[in-house]
Image 1 (cartoon, rainbow, N blue to C red):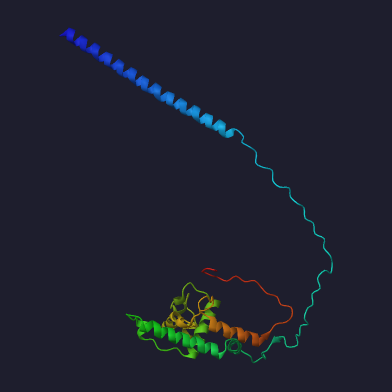
Image 2: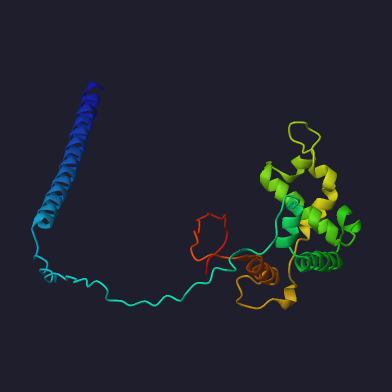
Length: 247
């Protein structure tokens, strides 16, 4: 029994030595591969550092000089007649803000906006499958309501609030004292939804101002009639919020 056990121990020790020697050979092979990779990287890095051919020299810059001559341009300015320049409206102590509004916002502009409101509202309601509570209660807009609507929008520009509904709020910190007396909130939001200035089928393709072209023409004619500019004008720069494409 002791002799067989000794032989088994010797055989197992020889197998372990063979396995350890094979593992050492594998480790040596791995180290050789790592060393070869390092040498290759050093060779590539050395090749990258080697300077290549120099770029061609740029063309020489030609110096340009200008000789200015006084009085070289003769510009004939047309005589400016400022005898009619200025406001073409008569203002006095009795003139009110509403008088100025009527002068700059003529009756034909109010009529155009009124018809745009009603036509767009009729087309929208007739094409709707399910009507809302406000749509079922809709009645045509009249010209005096347009003036009230525009006055509310002017007041909103002076007294700004986070939401339109805050102007009709019951909260004393948010509510407006004037706007609820001019128009109810339901009527305002009805008109605000159907604000429209032109017929969709009458628009000209390629016109950037096609949505407001008719109203634009009225204002351009009105402004040129109520004010004739002087010879020297100062044009101020202003920034306008815009969302969209310029081309």
